Image 1 (tube, chains in turn purple, blue):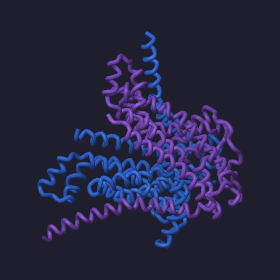
Image 2 (tube, chains in turn yellow, red):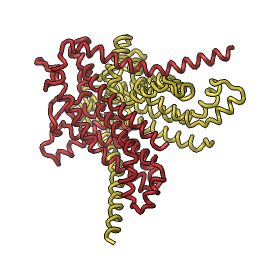
Image 3 (tube, each protein chain N blue to C red):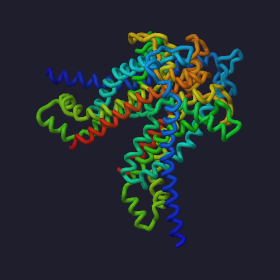
Image 4 (spheres, chains in turn yellow, green):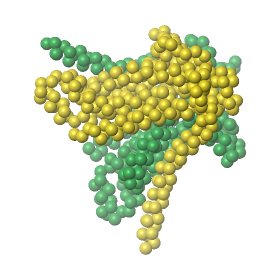
Length: 285
Length: 293
């Protein structure tokens, strides 16, 4: 009796601790979001979104930071998507079990673990100095593209792997070449899952501050960048700059800017989850 | 003829994109080594590894990496102390106790924790967590290692919970049934069969979380104080390796100066640590995969 009771109580205890652990994360998320909204929502206005930064917190806005973030987002996507998907196709469809595939695989696993700030150092030396791009949007986009590349490759490979071999075999049987099979059959079948993974990777890029600070993004930008060679700032750097100031007005500004950043990042995550849900429902092999 | 030409061209193009990842690694290593070698022409390795002060930006210059390492060690240790029990218990709960429906709702929400930008966590640590902690711990400075460490720990929960859950999930059903068949309770099965069987997967998840914590920049840059200090006291301002690199990047240090090169030496140390951890994780993971297939 007492032994069974002990076993029962232990079982309950582990269950309760587990439930509590799962809820700590959720609770933290709720407190984080609520506290930021409470402080920042009142500051959010059309003026805030369309003004330039200023010494006076109540006049400052995030217009250049939003435009800079959009530039960087598009630039990163432009470089990272074609490169990442191509590399994934090579690894998944062409290079199975060669020594090169093995080296590539270890290398990509390693790159995914390299801290983002190290990519900043790489970008600073290669793009900003050696290739003389300056502290431009182009240099920042290339740096972030290298940063998200391993992630894009990994998710694209998983999506390609999920396409059943029967699809490929059917195409070969009809006389299609390897590339025709991939381009006309495998890629369209994997498209939904690839897109989901890419959106998640890019959502991460839009929240990055550290590598762009090292590349030389500015903290005070009183102009709108017009070309990829212009200097820039992004939302996370603007937030970092405001948080670091002593006046309370700037902390409120930071909270308001964080709301905008969270809407962007969580919005992208929401789109990705929705796409994944839809592609899971639609495709049945 | 033409068809074969296209096939070949496409294949080389694709191969080139894949090889670019190796070029990236070579680029990182080359950049770090060249500048670090220059750095060690002016500063002895001995001083770098043993001096207890790090003041390259002051008139009285010292180049001891130890204070930055102690800062990184401190915040990382706090983060793992927070994340490991919570992450592991979460994984156990989602895998063994929760209904599939609960699991399918909670898991993606928990994964949002690692999707939130780190500046947001930095803000939260400084503006919310530190003042709350100050009410509990009277001696806590406005900038400290404790608050960013805890917040970072919450951030890396999904790294540990997701991968550990996959590892627990991968344990063959037959092992579980054998344990139940011998009269073991659920808790006994869990701690004597499932966790040992999944231990390499759990270990790999911890190593990955460690690498993430060591490389984390913005949370500590905002909330830990940017003051290099050789201490293991979590209540005072400190600086991590990553934060130092950000601090230098924000100032106007002339290119090619000794001060400028310090960020490459610091980056090199960081890079070596994370490569070591990734390699461990890769091999542990590979062993774990082979076990049941």
